[in-house]
Amino acid sequence: MTPGLLALIVLALACGGFFLGRFRALQMVGKDLRLLHSLPGYYGQTVALFTGVPALALMAVWLLVQPIVIETRISSMIPEADLPQGSSRDLVMADVRRIAYGLDTILARGAMSEASLSEMRADLSDIRSRMADVGVALGADVQPSVFEAAKAWRHTTGLARVGMTAATLAVALAGFGFATFRIRPEFRARNVSETFLRWLLIAASLVAIGTTIGIVLSLVFQTVHFFQLYPAQEFFFSLTWNPKFGGGSELSIWPLVWGTLYVSAIALAVAVPVGLFAAIYLAEYASKKVRGIAKPLLEVLAGIPTIVYGLFALITVGPLLRDWVAQPLGLGSSSSSVMTAGLVMGVMIIPFVSSLSDDIINAVPQSLRDGSFAMGATQSETVKQVILPAALPGIVGAILLAASRAIGETMIVVLGAGAAAKLSMNPFEAMTTVTVKIVSQLTGDTEFASPETLVAFALGLTLFVFTLVLNVLALVIVRKYREQYE
Image (cartoon, rainbow, N blue to C red; front, side):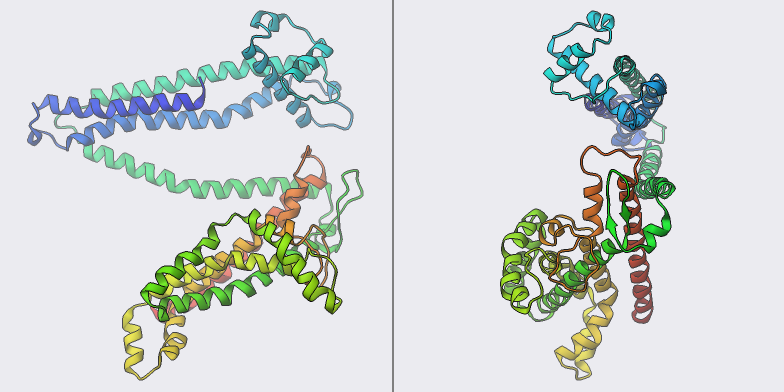
C-alpha cells in the first residue's frame, strides 16, 4: 500500500472516530447535554486525535528511517572487489535503486513473473535489454552482486512497506478503540482534547527549529568532508575559481562572494529608494482611490516568475545597456553583466520593500502625526522626523528581507550576469554569484566524493553564515531604535 493511500485510510478512520465519539457521548446521556462534562464535539475530537495523530507520526518516522536502514543493509551485500575502479559505493547503490525500479516496472507490465524473477541469474545482456525496455539506464560495469542486491532491495522494500501498513493501521485501530472505550459522561474530554492540541501545536512549532538544525548539520558535515579533501587556506585565501572535475581545481570563494555582493548592492540601490519612496507616497500622500489602484499594480511585480525577469534581462535590458552605455563608454561589449542582473533584480524586489514599509508606516500611531502637526511641523517634516524614525525597525526588516531575496536569487543572475567568476570593479562585465555556482556544481551525474561537488556545501554554509550576520546586524539596529521610541 502506498503511503498516500495509507494516510487517507488513517484520516478516514479519524473522521469516523469523530462522529462515533460524538454519537456515543450523546447516546450515553440520552442527548441531555447537561449530563456531559464537555460538549459532544470534544468527545469526537479525542477519538479522532488518538486515532490519527499517533498513526501518522509512526508512518512519518518509518518513512524517514526505512531508507537509511535498507541502504545500510543492502550496501553491505556488495563486496569491495565489485566496485568499479574510480567509482564509489554511492554510485553503485544508485545502480541498485535503478535496477530495482526497473524490475518493479517490468513486473507491473507483466513482462516477467515473480517466479521467473526469483530464478533469474545475472545474465547482464538480458538485464540491460530489459532495463532499456522500461527506460532505465545502467552504469558501465554492472556486476552480478549488484543485480542480486537490487532484487534484495526490492524484496526488503516490499516487506518494509507491508510492515509499515500493518503497524500504522494497528496503531490507528488501537487508538480508535482506546479513545472510544474511555468515553463516559464524566470523562474530561475537553481537557484531554485541548492538552493534546497544545502539544500538537508545540510539536508543529518545533518543526522550524528542527528543519534549521537539520539544514545546518547537513551543511556542516559535508563541508567538513570537503575540507578533508581540499585545503581550507586555498578556499579562503586564494583568488581564483577554476573547478576541474578531473583534478587540479582552484576553488576560491572570493570571486563568488564579490559577485554576490556586487549584484545585491546594485539591486538594493534600485529597490530601496524606489520602494521606500513609493511606500511613503502611498501611506502619507496618496488618496484612497490612487492607493487602491497603485498598490495592487506595484505588488504584481512580486508575482512575476524569476525566469521571466531573467529573460527580460537577457533580451531587453542587457542589449540596451551594452549598446547605449557600455560600448560608447568603452566599458564592455557583452550584454551579460552585473549591472544588467542588478537592475532587473532591483525591480523584482521593489514590492518587498514597498509593501512591507507601507504596512509599517501605516502602523505608526496617528497620535504621533497629530502631535507633530500640533507643534507646527509640515507634512514632510513629520514624515522625516517622526514617522520614519518610528517605523525604522520595520523598514530595516523590509530591507533585510529584500537583501536576502537578492542574495539567494539564481535565474536572473544566470541569464543576466553570466557565469564568469572574477574579481572586477567594472559593472558591465559578466560575473556570477554563490547560488549560481552551487547549482552548477551539483548539476548532472555528480559524485559526493570529490571536492568539485562538495564545494557546493561549503559555499552554502558560507552563504548561511553571511545571511545570519545580516540578521544579527538588523536585530541590533531594530533593538536600538525600538528602545528609543517605545
